[in-house]
Length: 387
Image 1 (spheres, helix red, strand yellow):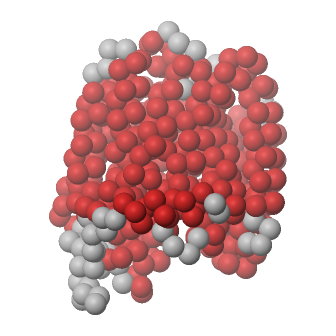
Image 2 (image 1 turned 180 degrees about the vertical axis):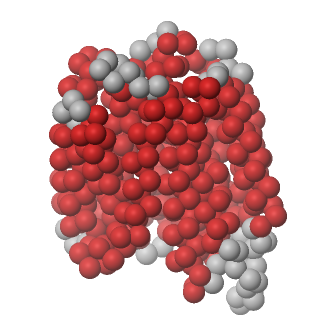
Image 3 (image 1 turned 135 degrees about the vertical axis):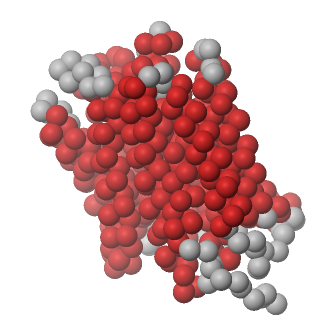
């Protein structure tokens, strides 16, 4: 029997929690040129500062869903935020790139504790009337956090030491714990699920589901493009003829805020045209944007990156919709598998795109990213034929 719900948490709570956790994900991207000089490494090696977190997020996402099902959504969020303070402090004191990567990997293991559990909390604890607003607020917060992490890191690094950026992340995580503890109401409908056999059955069914596997492949490819673009873009813009500072590079990431506009617009488009059509349109936008970045004038480069990012935001909405269309049970596990592939793509791009940039600069990186998007369009077109 369903227990009575209390008053829903205000949507701004979910926006704040989404912002504070996503500050951690991409924050070092604007610092990559500084870190490359600090540790004396090339684009592929310095890219692992972002890739370590992506890899850990990929590995942890499916397991976090199981943990949150057994332990509780709110409890998982609280512990994840509290523990996130520790690797941020370790990163701030890291004497070597290896220690910094270890700290970033630890951050990646904990970030899904907020993401996965908070999504499940919204689905179960927020009333149907307020659920759409809560989800929209959360997604908007994640987009804002993705931008602010890059922007603030670049800004504080220009004013002093890059390590201050990680002190800032430690403060943000402590603030996230405080917000969740004070403003996130205890669960009213949560019931623990601790049946390992059911998890194994769900995993078996998902691995035999071709549309879901196609969706996972699309997720891998679209984040590969996004991380590969932004990692190498920071390095390109730090060189001649641009020679942007970390603060200026962080400002370029304002294109990420377009996700605040694209995400709400994607809903009606997906409802009317379906994930397959949305994905093909998204890939067209991203490819056109990447080709535009071959130009030299900075405004055209930024416009091209903006178009490419908008395509990824639309593609991500299409992929998430396809996940739900392709399964009828064990939805949290399906979402965990998708995020495993999605963040796995980001981890791979951090290294592979870095090697492409080392080999031939931006001119060698763009063909890799375009080929990646063409493959995503092909996989989606074949795998989502009935979507």
